Length: 460
Image: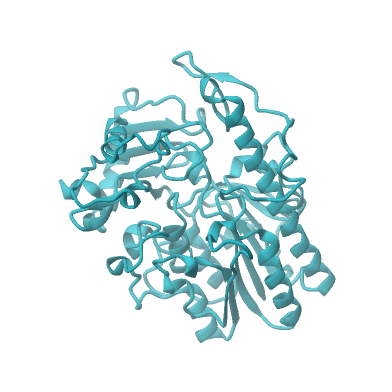
């Protein structure tokens, strides 16, 4: 069996047309989704690339594998290196079962160089943009230029291949016509929160949606469509090579992107649905495709990919995996595999160690967000504080680092949302349901206890 796992960076689920978005942003993914299993409640472990990818390749939460931040600008972060004894998916498949393994990714461009992303790969293709060394500037067409020849050369092998498309991450550098493709496209219908303020679902509060902001949303949607176009080229090539039916294809994302809805416009820092609700579409290989395709409402997470791939090849995963296999769901068995999922949010160094300043837990119905208080320490620099939220004034040169900390610390310590009646998280119900808050907070306490040094309250 062959495996192709696609991560579209910064791709929120509800801006894909196969998830009900009013703009046709993902026609190629939509077409595959018609013969696939579509998970409606896939939830990332965080809003950051590094921890999410580490959770995907280890099957563990960030508090367990101990990588809780993305150090794209932090060289020599030796206190944040994955334990070499933790099994990696590619390494296990290659060493134990003889799979040809490959990754089309470029996290090695980061100064921190998360070397565990390379471990176990026969090929690690570290693609660089022709004119820029900025990792997120790499376009899907640059990835495909290396990926498609690999598929052609190894079509007769069982392979496991990880593909990281940076689109639709900023800088929104997609070529025409995708820069203006959705310029005059339909918009979601405006609604009203219970406090009387109006908002456009999936876009933001009406008062925040200036013409410039709407143009940025158009660019984001266009970047999604650009990525979808090149994803379609890979699917077409798999079919022409005669290996589409033999390949299990997974399409998901490391995280989404807040538009102008919460506290981090056009960024991915927090644990709101705009950032952690990701697409998850699975087209299984014919040999395990024993049930008609359908939509699946149950909770799943990136930590579930590792055990599921092992289940698909009939093997047991290593010890220590926190995820669970969703293969039974593809076979018509409806039992959920998770009662709840955890997410980590913003973070900052405190007393010499990076710590999470925000945690969340969600069930099928509710989400509780909990924040700790951050302290601006004397030796912190601007680059150290980039992950402490992303306040609207973050580009203003006159605003100090203390302003950023004050902004975070003024946010509610607790937020509770009913995701079934209020999926856009505009009505905080923390005072309405104290019993639910207590129950979910107990789950967070147990999660913190796994690795208390990483929770920011322990720094105070």
